[in-house]
Image (cartoon, rainbow, N blue to C red; front, side, top):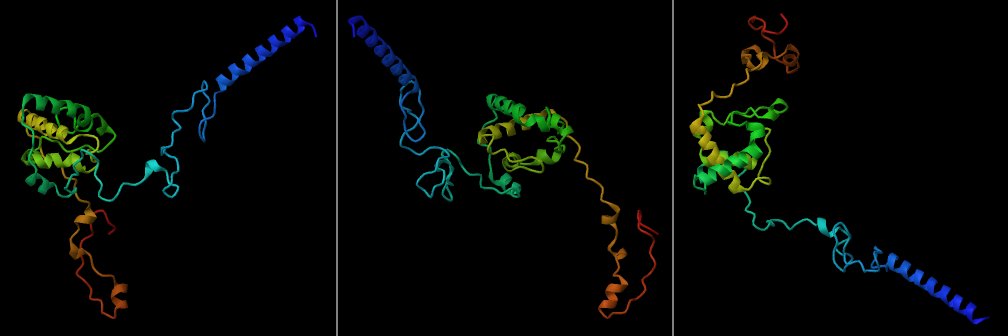
Length: 240
């Protein structure tokens, strides 16, 4: 083989080797059980540690969804000690830790207008925008709510009431206390709202107990005689 031919062949081999090297760099080297091939860099994500949603040594369960021990409390979290039905007790025992300064009231207004206004309305009248789709909450301007202690108002969003769920996970306790101060300011500026209307009872529910008499079949089955009762007028809405 002539020298030029050998030289040309060596050049082709060099080009081929360079091409394979570049391709190897593009493919990268495998790293771990689920390799990523990115520019020949080992996958720094694939390290010897527990991964979210990946089975681990604890019975093959995902390490990121293990249940916390019973009674565990998250850092910087104070569990709310009152049940939903203990609003009166909360009102007697809880005291607003914040002073009604202009800054606190302004912050309460900010929180109210970003969280509460959609249901309770701009003036606490219960006429928020979503009340066209959901039950209307009672007005915060009634005398009943005005007579509540601060702790009882604070208790309602912490535990929820009626169709309103608990906001304890969405709103910080200090933010809720500042909202209480803002509600007090609105109550000092707005007129007293009439009490919430009570739905009338249905005729069947309001019928006297004397109208309900045992049936003849039931009495006869117990071996008792049936004494004719005094005729009564038909119940409104029933059959005569």
